[in-house]
Length: 287
Image (cartoon, rainbow, N blue to C red; front, side):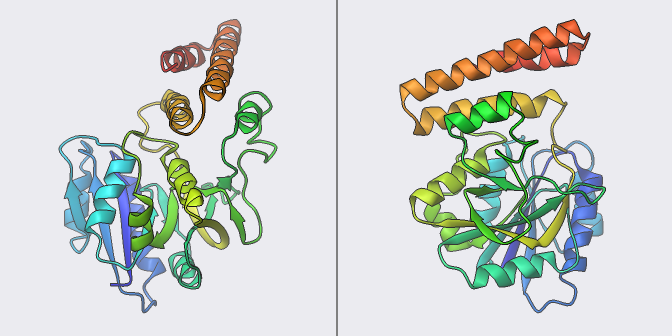
């Protein structure tokens, strides 16, 4: 088996159906032998039934509870038969020969992982990679709109080595995934891909961004509400810094996150946006 495509799923049945259809369309003329593994985290929207009725050749793993993104991917990777692994989010759509392009690219690399270029539904560019979140980068992200200015997240137009690529689309050899140690299951959702590639960098692996392979990505489709990504990013940053950084940098991170949350709460109250207030009040409880 050349390739195993692993898709964690949680209450995204319509998007998953679109994703699976795009995979088989993308690989219909390819000589790549592949399998598709869907790891469902106890969806209640009929996801397992959709997979079984419309994609009977897909290997379906059904969890009894939502175990999170990292653990679901680990389950898929551990049971995969392919020499190479492609991790895809259920809210992605493979365009044209995107999967084959990633496969041909990674075959020529060693000690490497690769991610494709993510696009929004309207075809506009979506940030797909970036630098590791040092204290300065976190400050720029929180207070200077670092993502907007392309300082903390970006989407290059040429192939290049980056610190991390989005886990929504990540390919590498199975043996390399196993060597790094798979995803840290202490992270439920968000930051687990950055944590994984941070460990990979320590072990002298490279992360490549390959813009010729393009995927539509909805983003945050499995989140219960708009506040979920914010809260989980706060939680992921705290976990990441506790794992890799010293006490001084952890304190600096906490102060910045607290300052961001308090400022957002004040602004939310001033402009009458209770949703913003509730989001950052919950984020504060993470600290």
